Amino acid sequence: MGVFVFLPLVLPLSAWPVARLAELHLHPRTATRLLTAVATVMALCSTLCLALLMVVGTAQLPGNPLPDGWSHAEVRAAVPHDEIAGQAAIPALVLVLAVCARTLWRHRRVAQRARRALAALPSRSVVVLPEEKPYAYALPGGRRDRVVVTTALLRGLTSPERRALFAHERAHLTAAHHRHLLAVRLAARANPFLRPLRTTVVYTTERWADEDAARSVGNRTVVARAIGKAALLSGGSPVPAFATFTGFAGFASAGPVPRRVAALLRPAPAARSWPSVFTSVGLAAWGAAVGTLVSAMSSANSAVTMVLILHAATPL
Amino acid sequence: MAQRDREDPHRPSRRRGQGELESQVLGALREAEAPVTAAWVQERLGGDLAYTTVVTILTRLLAKDAVARERRGRSFVWRPTADVAGLAALKMRRLLDGESDREAVLASFVTALPPDDEQVLRALLETAHATGGAGATDRSDAMGGAEATARSDAVGGGDGVGGADGVPDGTED
Image (spheres, rainbow over the protein chains, first blue to last red):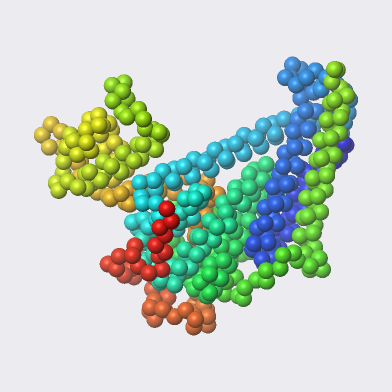
């Protein structure tokens, strides 16, 4: 097992270059799928390895609930620096599990509250709320997907822009972007090194919906204007609710909204499925793919080794 | 105890039921022509709700600013300040204001706009208006696109937004 058990904890670093380059050089759909898959696999591997280290760590604790045989010196010998690594892994794993459970719980609570808020209204796919604060949301709910939009926002947009807005929100629901977002959110909780991937995916899902909307209304400028106007309307409102969204310090100097508008004012990105290895982004993507593979193999190797050692150490 | 005994035992979900009751009570209030008492609401709803339940729901609606009350004699009279859609908007607003963790569920159309971004964005929209707007001319373009609508006083008032074109009339189920 040796050093392999530590690799998945740091291999997310291999995905940083592609997380940074994907925004400009990959189609948003490719970027979202690639980064979500990489983040999910790496988070699972990293958590598995934390669990393996935890087994080694508990071997040092007197009176631990695991089988006696697992405290055998041979188990501890499988990991270098077992004293430090094992002891650090216990609180780390507890923290990861607790934070992920809390994230899931809050996710469900928000979804439930949002659905309950709209429960009394007629079951249409579009809900227009009489409200002086301009906002629009896609609310996923299986067959009862809904787009929520306020009168204040609709008043500020022309009818082609409204169509762009609805096309954007529908794209979120059709492509189930909330699943990608939840996956990268949990992954970033499981291993903090995956946070840049989450930041990028939050942005690329919006870009993906923008591109789908541009295709369905057949006019990129209208979508750009709809986003720009909606942002200016929201920005002008004194209600501080949107301020909590600003944990989005990206790589580029401008925030996500101007970058989205600028991207829509450029020609549509090429929908290549996989970039050539001879470009910087291609190299970065392959780097992340190799990193993910190594991460999966290291954790599988460590898991198998650990199972064999524990099996041998457990008296039958 | 007595209140719970008199509530409908067949209701599938207690919390869901309360949300529906709020809408029913609000609907009854809106049918009244003048402020009415809780007893009137109870009678209006068919009498299978306990008086205390009606008062509880009215108090909850009061906390949400969906109804108002004033003292008349020894009791209160109630009047609605919001309709069912307005109540939904209030609930949604509370959710958005209260939850910082909502992005994963609710993918919003736009995120917050820092002051610097606002400048960049206005410049971009100017460019869009000057160069790319040819394919998408419409009414508001004539009056200066984003600049006009960015001011909240530029709102066009009474043309009922719900039925306007551009809003898909989604009737799925």
